[in-house]
Amino acid sequence: MIHIDRIVAGTIVVTAVKGRLDSSSSPKLEEFLAGAPSEGTLLLDFAELTYISSAGLRVVLKATKMVRGAGGTLAVCGLIPQVHEVFDVSGFSSLIPIHPSREAALATMT
Amino acid sequence: MTDTELDLRLPNDLAELDGLSSRIEAFMEAAGIGPTPAYRLQLAVDEFFNNAVDYGYPDGRAGEIVIEVRREGDKLHLVFSDDGDPFDPFAAPAPDLEGALEERHVGGLGVHLVRTLCDSFAYAREKDRNVKRLTFALAG
Image (tube, rainbow over all chains, first blue to last red; front, side):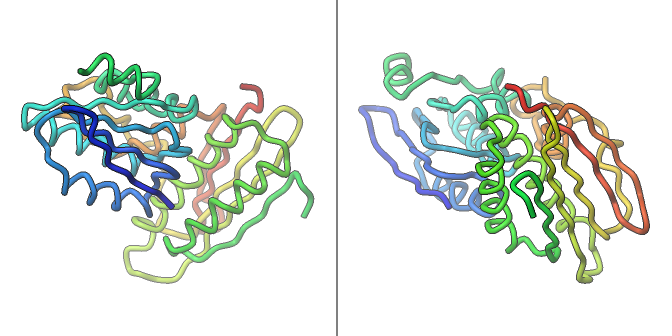
């Protein structure tokens, strides 16, 4: 199960995801992000994301392509160590900026 | 069933996934497995289950997936088997993890994650089943 919230912080759209991103829940995030404005700055707050599989990574990659294709920026923040490991091993860490917390991300991205 | 052994037999149906992850999580807690090895094993089961169901039974036949998890000394053992079409996931080429954003695809990424995060992996075709044996270090 996942829970998704959208918070607008100035010029940055924060999407906070709680729970697990696996093959059964990832389509919900995909749908949610497809309905979001793709231009501008998008921050995926994963502080309460307890799990991500390759199905979840696929959605993150797709969103990154969409946002960058429109000239915007996408970053993630708040990864727990196990999720961070998956980002590292998948090579996503070299592709997508990772910030330790939402506060740190907003300070850098604004 | 003791706290250190888990044996699950499931139909090849993605509707089983939510229940499957809950049962593995409960086992990990009961067996006192730390968050990192617990996550790595959960990921392996999840990726293998999805691949088996999505590609192992192209004719739509009913199948059986068996998952055995055992804690032994400082290792966690996983035996994942299915009666789908023969397929050795570890023989597939590694995905491109270096390319530019536009060139990235996530095909094969699940298996890459699993083989990188486990300590050892092996595949065998035994009695018309795909059998994958993995170990995970409990430290860390």
